[in-house]
Length: 154
Image: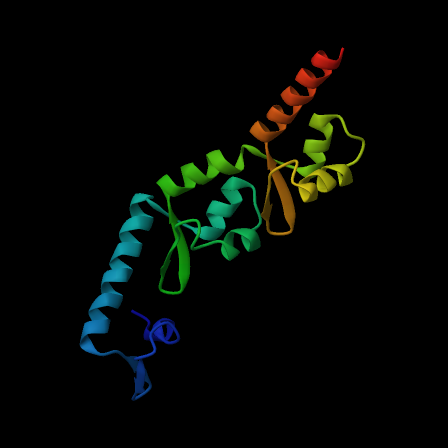
């Protein structure tokens, strides 16, 4: 194992004779983490967070900023996510649309009006990185409310 990788993640690491050394109890934990990582990668249960972001069609930056919220594990300084978590994330993120798509669905000319509705609290949105995303279910509810209101008036 390359102990240089360990330095920075384990404050008890000490450099002796040009090598990074750890106290016995911590060394056992490190070896166990490496075994878990190798087993997970070999069996396909664990994915690096960057690959998971790519599969969901999102930027690495937005994924990395939410690593702990997403249930990712940090092993030897890198973030990993399980396949089960990735499936859950995909179902959540694929239900979301950008403000441009939401404007098209709602029949608005420009996405800025969608931002206005979000700021007013009329539409519920999620901020992912620098983008605002809306749930398709929320957009369907708004369309139904508008169509019901127009039937009542008409």
